[in-house]
Image 1 (cartoon, rainbow, N blue to C red):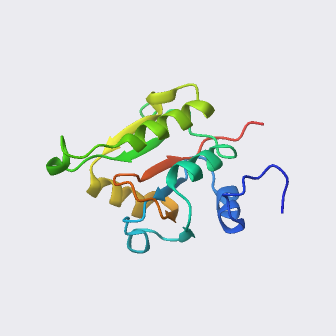
Image 2 (image 1 turned 60 degrees about the horizontal axis):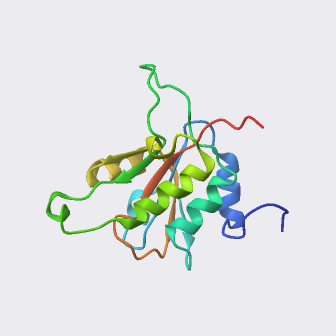
Image 3 (image 1 turned 180 degrees about the vertical axis):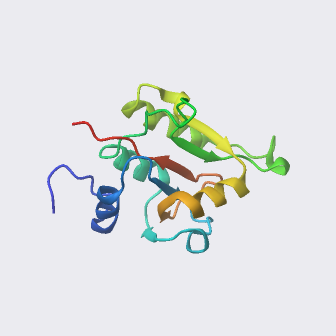
Length: 153
């Protein structure tokens, strides 16, 4: 055991978070996400929801603040946008939880977020995520990708 490490972060996840560098990404997935299909590496976080894990990770994981090659700062948190057939029919109150959690750790708040469609989300996970952390979150559209920033402390 270590001092100051949130108990929601398993030793395996802590190792991966520590090994990740600037601009590396992590996908925190709900229970419906096809993590074993999309992820290069998968860590199970059974018994945890995405909000608890997101809060724990952000205690040790800075979000990216640096500009891309075009000089723009891309939002470091990516959500899976509602599919067209779900727009107006499905609510995503869990996104409000995510935004409140991120705001605790990053002054940019809501500006940290972008939405992309399901297929782009899958592609981004497959191509860029160092790991997919599979939770047992039951809320739908509860997946989030985080892009790591620079540890300055």
